[in-house]
Image 1 (spheres, rainbow, N blue to C red):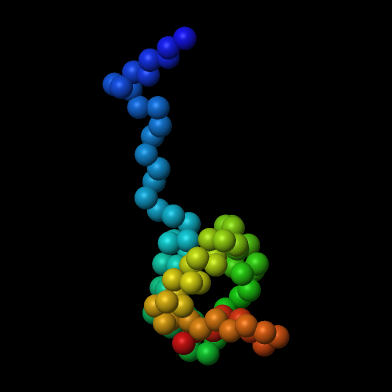
Image 2 (tube, rainbow, N blue to C red; image 1 turned 90 degrees about the vertical axis):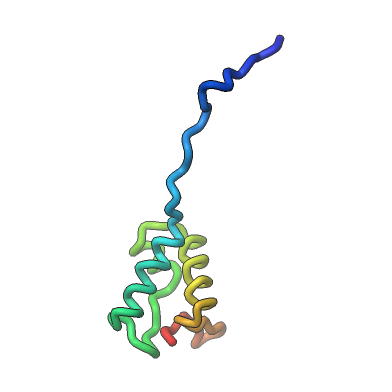
Length: 86
């Protein structure tokens, strides 16, 4: 049986442009630029940030990666590790 999809009518609607990780990154960048977060300040853990933003940890990780690539934060590993404002 042949099913003909009508090309005049879209099946899906476009998604909004904003992505969660971009909004998290924007808010954190703004806090750094406004000096609410100062150099040397330790950021909350990924788990705590995810709870504050009501977002997934993957979104938080991506935002932290973007901030690290922009040299706004440094992420360290180990027992004394964490994310710190540069």
